[in-house]
Length: 463
Ligand code: AMP
Ligand code: ZN
Image: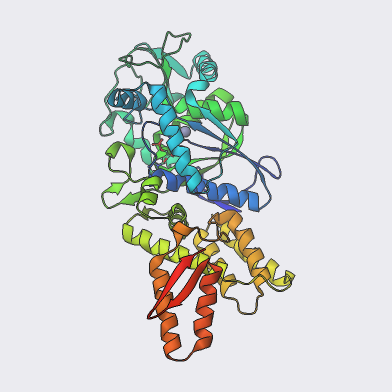
């Protein structure tokens, strides 16, 4: 499989550390608010990657964190803890906030048919691991205590800006918009591993440490959790492109200095989902969730379909027009699949040709749009029998996860579509094309839509 690697800034052949196995880490959500469809686009990208690796025969072990402490509003070391800010706003404890939004996250996550990670850990549950790592970083001189906090000294790292391809060199934290200068830091781009002093106001999440009561910085949680549960080296680590700097840059620095060797081979980053006002973000307020789309009558899988129609490394502009289009195309696709009669013997040769074509697309840096084109080709192939078609579609759906062979539920029936079909059938009858009229009636029947001719009007019932 070819995969774009942010670390080397190019597409590479994927070679796992251990043959046939993949260890992978996905940065989890910060649970101070609902996860929006931009966050979900990122998790769809990760899901496609996991499903593709499994399709190719790899045994995948994936870990993910839940950020429930330490992520400050600046994404760096200034501002407030996002969890505490939400707790104060909603008049709840930070742990109540975390529980509520974690549940909401997985509710939407499941609606998108996203595979759950094998290992899922809240950041607050692994404090001992962060303390162990920070202790060693202090002993080896990579970290220092200043102003009561523990900081990582980025000048000790040979190629700190490698992941950003040095684009971030000039973006040092001290001069980034909205990030305050911190006089306790030796270099302004140093980052906090442990807070013990400045951020104590109303902070309910505090733990004892060798440096006094405090709480961990945001970046150390992903390093700590992944090293503890996946081991000292892993194949793939990913997130959204906004995680490249400072989050993943800092993860690499502290992990490799702690371990004394290379840590992650492939860095996988998903581009953003934008709306008309720019990058969708929780802190901006105006966000759309999967549940909200569902309330408006959209199928969550139509959103998944929309995300897969473009490449994960391209920005995706969300508009309702685009979603309407995706939903209509998705429903038509399912209708087409439901209308395939399961007959004939498996055509081994064609099955293997189409399967290879699908693999070629999906393993070309997850080219989902081309993989979908192969699916359409299968559906349209007049010389291919229904049984082979369905076999291929079921296989491909192991990656697409679009419930392609599932009959429509009652609430999913697209009324406009049924009305159009009834209209088409009436036309056919008027033209005495009874074969077409019957064909339309049978097609609808397969989808559980039963037509009844009453005087002057055709009505329908859903089975
Ligand atoms: P957060 O909950 O803010 O920590 O974000 C969870 C994940 O969603 C991170 O990996 C982000 O990189 C990613 N993310 C945030 N906003 C967007 C967006 N608009 N489009 C795609 N991914 C995003
Ligand atoms: Zn992370």
